[in-house]
Length: 100
Image (cartoon, rainbow, N blue to C red):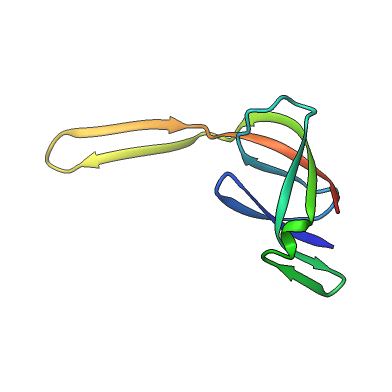
């Protein structure tokens, strides 16, 4: 059985026991979250839309962190302009406990 959930403007396909990194959530570590499913596949039986909204996905926050740094540079020819900077995207790591 797997489900598709939406958080942070992105959709994730999840199974029980999966650990995934999602956009940062302002909740403390150890707190349990409930997501409503968008799509559910249960032994070949597919639920989509309003039928899938009754299925709840329960997850627990494992940790918070920052992703690896990416370097971004800009350059304008003939203008003597260069710029280089980095960015680290914050994330929340969650573990899927139950799909019911």
